[in-house]
Structure formats: C-alpha cells, structure tokens
Length: 86
Image 1 (spheres, one colour):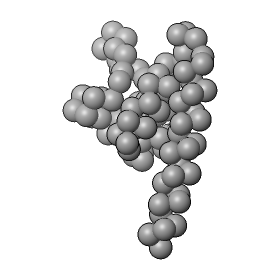
Image 2: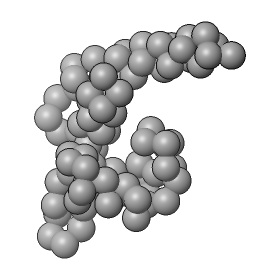
Image 3: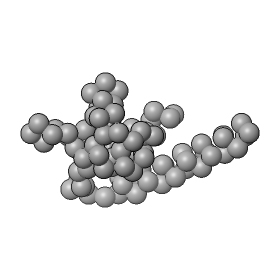
C-alpha cells in the first residue's frame, strides 16, 4: 500500500513539474484567478476559498493584491505547491 502511495506521489510530482514548466513558458500577462477558482481546481488539496486565502496570509502562497481583493497566478501556485512537496 505504501508503495502505491509513493508511486501516486511521484506521478503527481511529475504532473506538477509539467504544469509548472508549461506555465513558466507563458508570458507575464497570465490570467489571475480568484481564491474560489484555485480551491475548485483542487491544486492545494483544499476545497474552501477562505483556506486558500489563509495559505496566502500565513503560509506564503504567492498572491497579487488587486485593491482589497486577492488574486493568484496559476503558475505561481503550482510552483509553490511543488516547492512545498519538495
């Protein structure tokens, strides 16, 4: 069972690496996502948008402040997840 979990993690890391590389290739005019959109994608393993915002405030999840709103670049979020998982 542990071996299967390790395989799933390595496959997930490989998928994240591919996503990060693809996003890094995009230009700087990347779309900004709301915390609800990030939560819906399931990238962080959480489903509530307030948890995504809490990650930005307390755990260093990269974000962009637009007025009083918080937005996220998908490439930044994916890179942060990759760095957190080591």
